[in-house]
Image 1 (tube, helix red, strand yellow):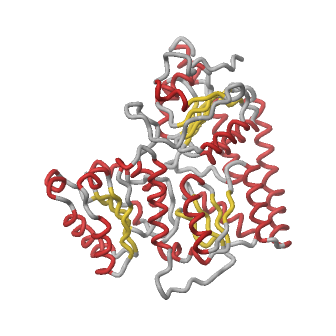
Image 2 (cartoon, one colour):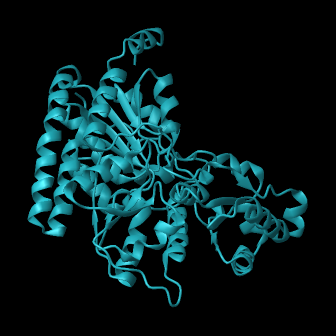
Image 3 (cartoon, one colour):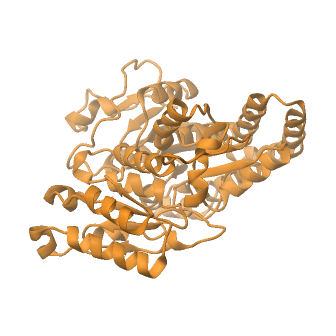
Length: 460
């Protein structure tokens, strides 16, 4: 196989400013350029700052999520995550101040205050998150003051989320805005006492297709209780009890490391990174948790659970590996923790990763990624559609794992596709999720439809 990437800094095919955002593993020792703003005009696969904040906060089930901006911004609201709830469905309703030209010229603060009044009257929520959008940031509406007044009037948390898009071309800035909003919500008020417990918080878990409930079942079997997940299937009341936990698990590091560090500093809660995608990752994470508790009974339950569950995954893996070995795969996802998990799962199936990348990876995460991959693998930070399409064709990719924006790039090129996006409704976590993932990889990679599509297109 030709492992040399033809699209390098030496060619004219690359936008000059993008050259340092694409590297190949092996001989190429250059550091990848990452964590910077997206290049204007390059049509980044990333989402905006507002979206970064929304995807983190939206699963708070009983809160009202109010978008202060033009109605178009609210289109990125309804079911922005495939998060399930065991109770309230408030989070699935769309609320927007629907700013018009008049509001943009004369200011929208009065309209925002009136919307909050109406929402409190109709829904009596325990908290309201008010998201700032690009227009609001540009005209300078003081949403902090409006929220403060509303909090004092109604005695509930009305929290501004400063997610104006123009502050950065990086979705990560929205993660930080969401983290700051959560921190305001969970910080005990003067005189409040939060009882310390042996329960843990699960940060960066959004209960897509009920994934939080799977991990919760595993931990309960080990004798451990989840205090609250942030933010999947969470309530305002549960979130406020989070400072009383003894440990924070961090699954989505991109969205939750800032908050985990803040909680460690201010509440004395240590954290460990976990990854429940893939059987081996799940087993390792459960063992890390058991090790933290240092309880022989918890350790025994943990080992019994792993022994019972992992055998079924290995059996399915062996069956489908025969059909998938040697197939070429591409991965493009939001954050690095998910990329690590998918790389490991696909490699366990004997597949070759020829392209990978993320929207929000950090330098150290890309370095780790490079160590997991074989020489010549293309790694892209903050890719655009043209780059992804070029490499899918050039590397003769059989299957791609990604999100909604990558789905159609793959399909139109006759490439199988695995949805690992935050809006999916099917859980892929834990041991049962690993089996589901393997079967999905096989079904899409080996589907006969791609053969006919490629023949019609003259082959890839």
